Length: 167
Image 1 (cartoon, rainbow, N blue to C red):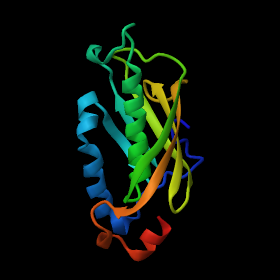
Image 2: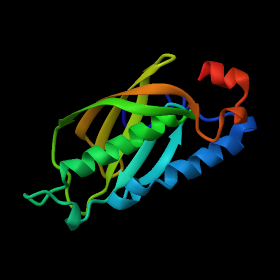
Image 3: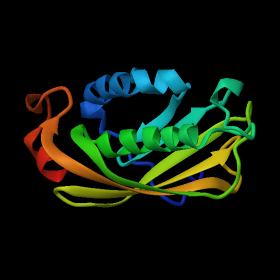
Image 4: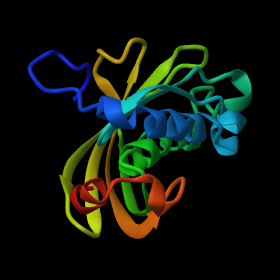
């Protein structure tokens, strides 16, 4: 996972559908829960997303490091965007977490979510949370599963039929 290194494509929306992508971007960036814990959407594309948070002292656990709920919330935000990135409404079925190191208060945390498989109804994702620029060793690793509904963000009539069939 980690940074896109040029060896793999960075899946983006096609230019002819860029207005839909822009509207989805607004939807993803206006999530009230993300605002509550300070999550920012850094970037996203088809099947992937990157989010960031800088945990403040009011988001600390009892030993003074970033609360696990903040780490999970950050990872879930990246997962939510990645699985909804095609425009199809998706909901979480499962999210499993492995905490590997602590997140420091005041130090940025970055979550990268990537699709690892997708079928008509289910999609699987890996999510890693790292410190700083997102290139350090992970502090948490997640596997996530999404259920893909028949509903579409922004309305089904907005998407071309071939898009809906493929995605």
